[in-house]
Length: 326
View 1 (cartoon, rainbow, N blue to C red):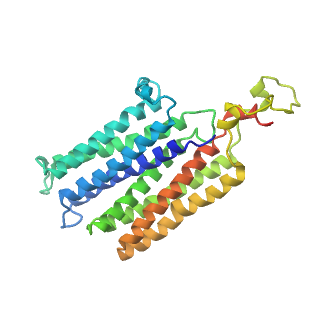
View 2: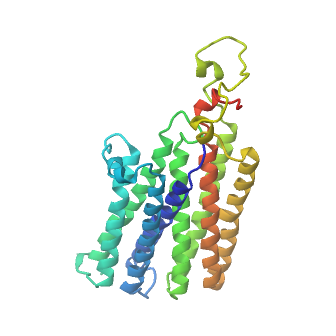
């Protein structure tokens, strides 16, 4: 499939934004359970949520460039009963709205206690809103991944590993951004975020590597015989049937061929996972904010390349018919 740059930016930006929201809520809970005596102020979470909202907003803005007629974008939400895309269109603004509420209750210090536990720990409004926000963000990962996992005739996407990787890579990038933000703010959560970012980056590397291996080994259930409905034992295509190009031959074939895909695969493994893992590890040990910022930037560039490969690797079944191009 021909990757659309608007979708590349959409999925990577909102993935990082969702991950940052989950990281902030996780960090707040880390204090609630008594892991450290030092607390973080509300401004830290409010500013962090604002950064997440900027990432989510940029992703939403990028999505409009994928629409043929942006004035009718609202219609994308009308098929929510059957379409994962419609569910994403609805859930993304919900996550953003919850992010605004999460930032607001922290920024204005609205912290009424909702529940007190036997160990003298309490659950206040900010933590409750955080749980709902993090849950919605995690659900959005699943919904976004299912847009592609449900396309059964593209075998490279039609797998639960697509959803797993959307979750793992989004959380990895979000926690890396959180570690950089915490280091800049001299927050006691820096080590916590960096440790989680390192683990999540390595988990994402493992799951994405497995999907690459799976796709390399998988065999398509479709053949040229089934594509044209002729079951003769010897069928070969001599011509495309067109004198020029068409939508089918431009939008469903990989630009640059397999060579470009191999280069970008190596690039996203290096810049999306290996290099950030090293920089996060060193940044975790030294507390170097510049190194954690560099890790977040490198990882984002690597994930852009990963998403390009993800879409380009999707081999549409129609390519069986158009495999010989004029």
